[in-house]
View (cartoon, rainbow, N blue to C red):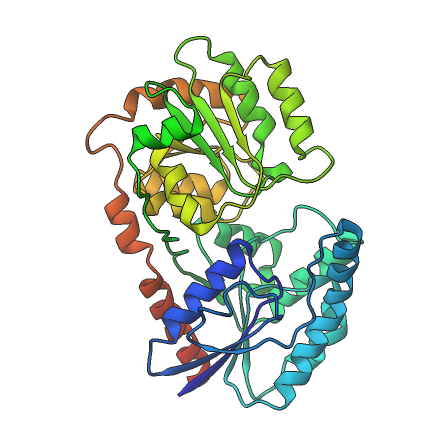
Length: 386
């Protein structure tokens, strides 16, 4: 039996959920024994059916300055704790869900041992922002990729980008599905949900779901809405916003007011409980993933939409565009500007009612956790054998 040790730095979010579902599916295979190393804050501790060692240092805090300090200290502390735990374990594969590239230089030699192989899931090939020093961080992230025995990505675009960024990783990159994120269905019908949120029953409704970040390009989406004078969709923005800065609720409300969209946008600025997700997807006609074109990773939000048969509107963000075009589960804008988004919004509303326009069944069949686990396990076995 293969023993696999996962390293999970972040306690939750999309990557935390991805790791939990992958580890759960792998754990159903008799050929593999899975254990996850995480902090006590890990969101899926109670539901984990695989072994867990919650010995990493917590990185969460309510105070933003304290949270940033703990995050920064965790870049050193948690890889060291993981290495220390690994010394007392016998395992065949170490699987990184998160890569602490800032400090990789200082634990690189300790993690690479003849006793096991090192692999990683590459959710974001490049880092959009720096922690301290971009040049240093890029150098050691690239070094991690080229040191690894195997790397997993979710699209051909990511594979090509990774080869360009880290040519030394050639021959060790494997494409696996992301997997669909399932949530409980709504207990109410669409009309009831729209009445609850004060949305007119005859409006076309778009849903912008998930935590708000700069790369999600929300200002351009709002500007695009303002350009539609006829048949303007109603937009629900549901997810936690920053407490201050350009991604804060006050900034977006000012923008909405200046664009004269106060009657066309609903903001739900908070964490959305699992039991509420189905309600929000029930009232929507399409999902808005109009992210910046330099967003290269796969999206958990897209995989929630696929679960609920909700067509999505995406920009030419490489992995999103590739997925939507291949599986016909939405529409792709010509660019990530307000003008390009507005142009596609006009077309989208006319195709939502077409029977057979979108192929969610095929997407769920081919982009499953079972397929991901099977391909991942095959790579583990190949590495262990050779």
